[in-house]
Amino acid sequence: MTAPTVVGTAAAPRSARSLVVVLSAMAVSLTGTRVSAIALPWFVLATTGSATMTGVVAFVEMAPYVLVKALTGPVIDRLGPRVVSWTTDTVSAVAAGLVPLLHGVGLLPFWLLLVLVAVVGAVRGPGDLAKEVMVPEAADHARVPLERATGLSGVTERLASTIGPAVGGGLVALLGPMAGLTVNAASFGLGALVVLFALPRGMGRGALAPRSARSVKSGKSARSGKSVKDDEREEQAGYWQMFREGFTFLRGEPLLLTVIVMIAVTNLLDAGFMTVLVPLWAQQSGGGPAAIGLTGSAWGIAAVAGSLIAAAVAHRLPRRVVFFAGFLLCGAPRFLVLALDAPIGVVLAVFVVGGFGAGFLNPILGAVTFERVPRHLLGRVGALGDSLAWAGIPVGGLLAGAAVALSGLIPVLLVSGGLYFATTSLAALRPEWREMDRLRGRGAAADPRAPVRSAVSAQSSAGVDESTAGVGRRSLPVASSHGEG
Image 1 (cartoon, one colour):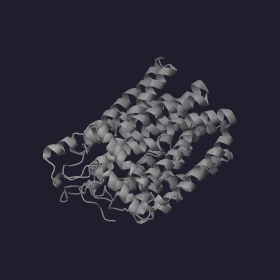
Image 2 (cartoon, helix red, strand yellow):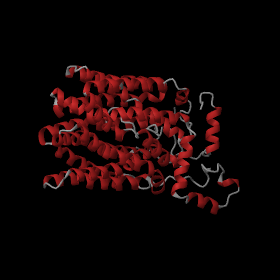
Image 3 (cartoon, helix red, strand yellow):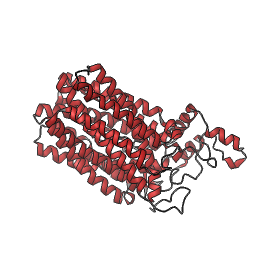
Image 4 (cartoon, one colour):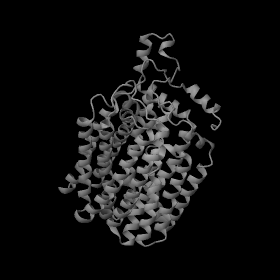
């Protein structure tokens, strides 16, 4: 697979600066989020002693995350991911910083904690998506294959998942959970500054369709007799029209829809695992927050290794085989080893193997999505796809907390592991997966200058391709947690 050329500027010099800055902003904000993922549940458990309340806090953060993210795709496409990224990170920094500040002066009742957590969740969704949307543009400037760019994005995410739990576990053990939440607020502020001042000028602007491109709604080109005024009206489409365009495109992509459904189920199980089951296991086993940090770091280090290998060679590997092998390693074994009350050494070994497998998932999902989704639709399609894939995350902690209260930790771990294995195994039987390798380097997004398919053509082509009976990234899911919370 050859490296793509920079869109519209084939003679432009190759520059990795854009990719480095985008990945740096992702690294900073994600590391703070991973620290908070340990500090916040431990703070709630320590102050309330309730697994149910811990699940409620997770729900209050993730429900706004999913809902707002689903609705902000047109805003990202209109304003541009750069503006959305630094503004939402700024708001997150303020809201997250108020938690330790108000707690320190004794003015943080539980209801106010829920409000601040909800604000952080609401603005973090579009902020995360905005950074992801800039990855293919940065890859164009660096002239690297999509698998390599998304692989490096995966490495960044995994490094955050390695450093974050280690820092979070250490801070909570030594200084208490408020220290971890303070680091979270600072990371959001630093992420905003990186995007605002370090990103090259002109990068991350709005990505609406150019006048020469076909509109998703009509499928007609501006060169087919339309006036400039008609094109301008299309480019100034209203919010709901833009939203419908993203929905219509996604509806005509059976592979992405299949990915989203599978990731939605696994994300629900992962959310309960990370926000409730692992903290309870650490508490009951006597390992405490240090055990959470150890398992998270073991997972993250191995996932970094997997992502690095994926960045180097994933564009040469059969995507479908690698994808489901990765899920086999990173799914059910984590639940089972905790249920068996295995020694910490065995637990860490299982997490290492699982993390390595998980490192291959998001690079593949990202490349598939960026190939299939036109650039000017990435915000809309990515927002819808990510939100659908994350739809179960807000209730994952609630369901896990309620289930543990009813039946205990070990039965819930066993049932969750079985559901994880069944979901990924049954999904592998779907015929749509053969499409994963079909559009390598030549999908709709591979050349944004190519005409965009209309809703009708998207559906009809799905019927013509021999393997379609029929993410965004991340699967669209680029948003899958894969056991990291």
